[in-house]
Each structure stands twice: as structure tokens, then as C-alpha cells.
Image 1: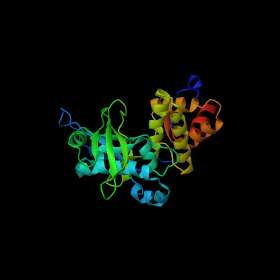
Image 2: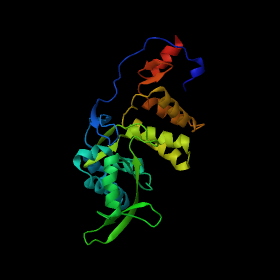
Image 3: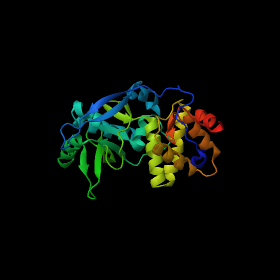
Image 4: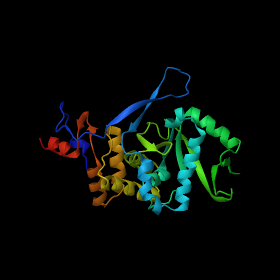
Amino acid sequence: MFNKENYRTRDHVLCPSNPIPRTESRPLNRSTPDTHSRTTIRILISTPLHHYHLYMAPLITPLQQAYLDAYSAACALVPRNLRQTIILFGGAASIAHGILDRKAKDVDILVGVEALEILSDAISNMREGFHRDHDGSIKWDKCDSSNIKLFEVTVEFVELGGPFVPRIPEVTGFGEGYVATLTELVQMRASTLVNRGDESDHIDFRLLLSEVVKRGLKLPHLREEELELMVEAVKMYEESQDTDELFMSALGSFELGGVRFENWVAWARYMSL
């Protein structure tokens, strides 16, 4: 793995190319005291995930479908101009990406300030199946055509750009809303693994990383602190050389010691100089 103690600074970059997936930046209006402030959200230009979801639909369980339906119900409450501020992530996002091996505990949704106000009002007034449980947790009821409750799933709204997820993630379209990309989910899970380290986090991080490699994807460009976090997460698999290899296969461009490298091969060549 990367050894920063032996790292030598250079003022040039080796082996350019291997471009990261093309993205575009779209403005995301935030409800803040500064009316001129704007945050950008990157939307990955790719095949819409609702098309991708079609091929994996026969394998999905009714409960997993209920998780996705809870997100769709939340989207339906929010005006279209705010849909970019309501993003599916966490375990339910893995389901949206067709990863059905693991059970999600709840539906995690990143939400902007304005969208959260609308959703909070819907919860308080018990609209569209949303309500609060006696313990204060947010629930959504999945009902059949006769309005008979089939499932009750837990929903957690997380502040978009807040302390838990400080960086606005790269997303791709999913139904009427957006889901964090698979490579973003890997980085989010790495952060959770390092900070919490539950057994489920170990399993999920490696599963997501293996899916990224299996699908021929690359992690987005990693700044030095992001690279350090990923390396720390991989190191938690002490004797698993396989996890090291998965990470190196998924690694795209990154910064280290003030130098940008397009891939780990470029870094290895640089270190051999």
C-alpha cells in the first residue's frame, strides 16, 4: 500500500489519461441566510438507474421493494425543482444498484433544507404513509390496493452537506429522484467503517468494493484526505490480500504529497525513479 514516509515530492504528473466518468455540475439551491450562496451537485451521465432496476426486479424481495417505494413516496411529496436535494444512499441505495445480497435496516435519504421542511410537514400530518413512531423514529407504511399495511419501514433523513455527509455526492437518476453512485457508496461506507467499524460495515464495504471492480468502474478522483480514509478502511482487513487487490483495481486518479497521479501504476513508476 502507499507509504507516505518514503514519499518524495515532484512538481510534475506521470502517465496522464484514464479519464474519470464524465459528469456535469448543476446548481443546487440551498435555503441559507446568504441568498447568493449556491452548492453544486454532480449528476453522473449514464444509463438511468430505473432502467437498470428493471432487469433485477424479478430477484428483489417484497421488503426490499418496500424500501425503494418509501423513497419514491418521499420524492412524490417534493416539487420537481427540489428533487436534486433528496438523494437515496445507504443500504437501500445498494438495492437500487441491484445489490441484493445484504439486508437494509432502513431507508437513508440525504435531504436539503427546503425539501426537509416539506417532508417534516407530511410526517406531522401523516400524509402519504409517513408518520412518527412512539419512539420518535420516522416510519413509512407500505400498503396494498385495499389499504392493508404490508410493511412498515424506518426512514432516516440526513442533512445534505451536513456533518455526517459533508460533501455533496455524485448521483445518478433513479425513478423520479436520484441515488448516490456505486463508487460514492463505497466512499461513504469506508467513512462509516473507519468511524464505527461494525461487522456489517466490514461486510458491506468489501461487497460494494467488489461490485465496483466487477462492473469495471473506478473510484472518482480522491483528494489526499479521501485517499487516506480509503487506505485506512482497507487496512482494517488485516490479512486479506484480496481486499488490497480490489482496492487497487478500483482506484482511479488521486492526490498524494501534492502530486496528482492518474492511477496506482503511475504512482509506482514515480516511486521507482
